[in-house]
Structures are given as structure tokens and as C-alpha cells.
Image (cartoon, rainbow, N blue to C red; front, side):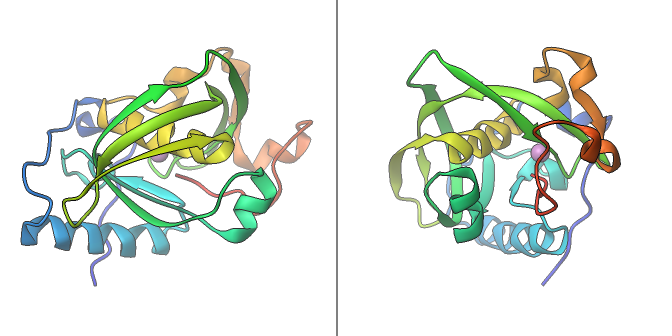
Length: 183
Ligand code: NI
């Protein structure tokens, strides 16, 4: 078990386009996923992208617990490993909600995301798969995949007054509850 250091906003690796993974079954990738999982759990995150642990590869992990699925009205998702993801909006409509990011500690922002997306990629076993996602599930995938293209959520915020300290979120209408976690 290794807990990796998380890159913070300003580190150049978070601005790069990450590289495709040729073979997900390489021992190096298997170890990376295990370490990312340990790191995500330790940091109380719900998602993590490889560039956030200083590895420029197209790999993200995320999970949506039963409680989060109920709260955000989306399907629950046990730990998902998504390699070389390709994402496609399936509607023009967006919704705006609060996000946090382990690479942007202490802040929250209201970010517009597509309501409905399709995504495909490879599993850790190297199998291709395809899914549709709505709501919070769609939001998490869009946030994590942005990391692979060098984009952090503050770059998606339309109005900078929607970027705040998380300790101040209680003053906002429509604020998330205390269980809100970072990606
Ligand atoms: Ni993030």
C-alpha cells in the first residue's frame, strides 16, 4: 500500500494532456491503480485521475456509494477504473452544481456539466466497455476526464463569484451537505 502525493493547482502536470495507455495489464499500471485507490481513500475523495498523482497517463478511478447515489439521484457505482476514456455529450442541456477537487484543496465551485453523456474506455483487465451516465455520475466522469486534458474545474466556472472557500459554503443557498467530498 502506498499513499501518493497529490499534485496541486499550479503544478505543470495538471495542465498537460496525459498519454494513452498501450497495455492496461502491465504490472506498472496495476500497481498505479492500487496506489491511486489507497490515495483516494486516504484523502476521502470520490475520484482521482493519474495526473493528480504526477503520472501523465489516461487513467481515472471513481466510485459512487449507495448514499451518494441516493442523494444525487443517480446510479451507484462501485469502484470504476477507466482507461483511455472517450466521452461524448448525449444532450445539449447542462446543470450547475458544486464540485471540489483534491488538487484544489479548500475551495468549491459551481460548475456546469452536461446532463447526459456516453463514455467508453478500457477496464483494468483490458476489456473495452461503454456506458451512459446522467446526473452526478455524469458530472464525476466529466470532472475526472477533464484532468486528462489538463483542465481543472475552476476553468469551467462561468462566474468567478461561484468559486468560494469550502468553509464558507454554509452561507450559500443550495449548498451541499457536510458529506460533500472532493474529486
Ligand atoms: Ni479533481
